[in-house]
Length: 394
Image (cartoon, rainbow, N blue to C red; front, side):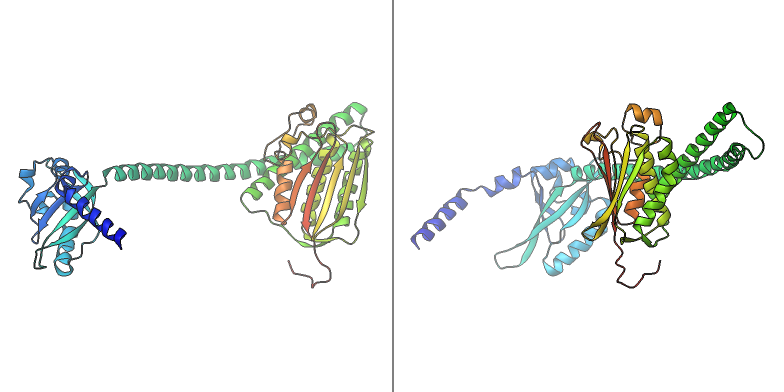
């Protein structure tokens, strides 16, 4: 009790020593006191200075003399409500300076009563919001600029997509007969060929195949990017998909005297698009063939169950990949800068397409390597189809 009495005594002495008039006058907040009819009976220095008047010029003026036209109705409504309820709402009010310029403020305050408890006026505090508005306008202007730039980018992206669709179609159309006639000529159905002619036609056929693959990769990349890749899923034997992909690549492997061996789990099924998974495997085998040495090169393809997923590994004993490049090789257009890469060419789209196909199956693909000269292993995870459950429809 004694401590409380001392505390109250200190509070009273502190209150007696405070000059509230000085606080009112020196406050940076715009302060004014008005009567019930809205006429100013007092203001602080900040209020008069901000509006461009002297205090003497302010006293006796209506608050509407200092209110911007856009806020007159709002302030009238607020004043009417205050007279009835004695409550002062927080309102955004625009004030008008002597020179006619306007600026935003946040209005708040408290009612003033006489000794008999009758309301005789109110104090009003007006916080200048000019700086906040300035910052907000800058942000809004930047947002509008970003929005416009985004719209421009979307338009450019649409033009790009239309151009890519057109150019790939136009390129594909003449390539089909070029490749077709090269195949016919090489079969010697139209007459025998000498070795030089065969060699030149092989170049034409090989170049046509490379260009057709490039066009297919560009189209697939566009579909994946736009979320338009269509998958025709059915329950498939993973070992059969892998075996067929290997059979397709055997001529290329035998030409380089490279062995492709397998270690496949037989009863492993996936709900997938067979052609797309074979496309991924063909791409991985092609890459391996390009980056492993002839005759002594080898590719091992394994499949097995890992937890609730099917695991495929395509492993080679080729040039390997630096660990700093492992996460980048599936990025669109990224190519590891090696002599072999420069010799075999490519666009950096193949592995990006593979990633898109696997991820659209709900799977995952990544590469592992101990470094340059130590081979590469590409890992694929795909959801397993439980054959004991009812077969789902596509």
